[in-house]
Length: 151
Image (cartoon, rainbow, N blue to C red; front, side):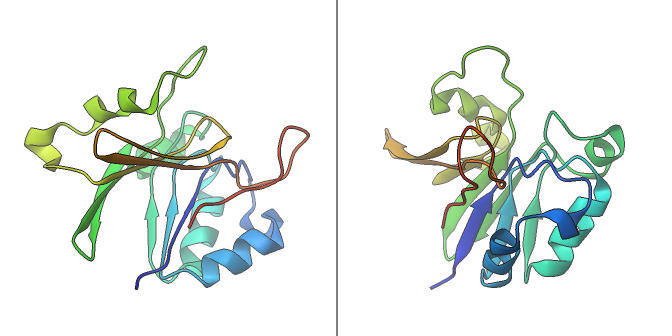
């Protein structure tokens, strides 16, 4: 069975300042998905170096260089399961996760099984209408919540 880690919103300029537990978890994953909001390409490259296989997108807080270098969304297939990865730039109150589906038009992406996304900084793992939505929360501890990931 493939072990997939989902994280986002790490907000670090230098990967070596990322929480040691997060870095250890990434090394233990077969595939590490980062759902955006890195800040710098140095952080992206550190993540990629630590992961066996990395899937990455940019977020709304990323520097322009990161936005130019990384896609807004990606789709991967693992063991027959299709996973869409994105970092929506919602303003105001977050809509329901189903609002992410237009980011993955069926004509372009086919049928997804899972949508992994960042931005809300709160862990989420729900199934609705046959779709599984996963948000790893935020990859660093803060006054709001501890650092979180999803497997």
